Amino acid sequence: MKDKFGGSSLFGNEKDESFQGSLAAIYQTFGGKDLYPSVEEKAANLWDSSLPVCMVSGEEWHFI
Image: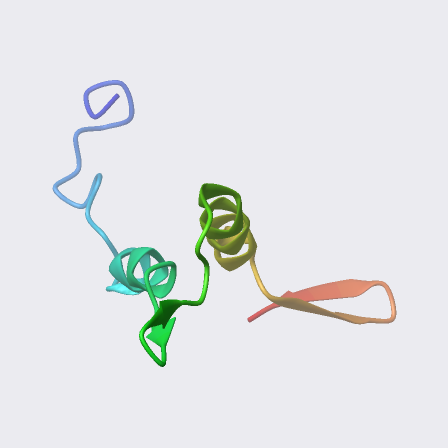
């Protein structure tokens, strides 16, 4: 894909640490217990964290 889309040195580089943060979030604990104990809960948390946060103002979408 890198060759197909121009071969930029920026291709495939992470913009920040948000991906690692999303992965770490599913392994959070409180009082020694997993906050997301099942595979389904971990998957749901990953799905939710991957969606863009947005606000609707009238008919405009503002991605945060």
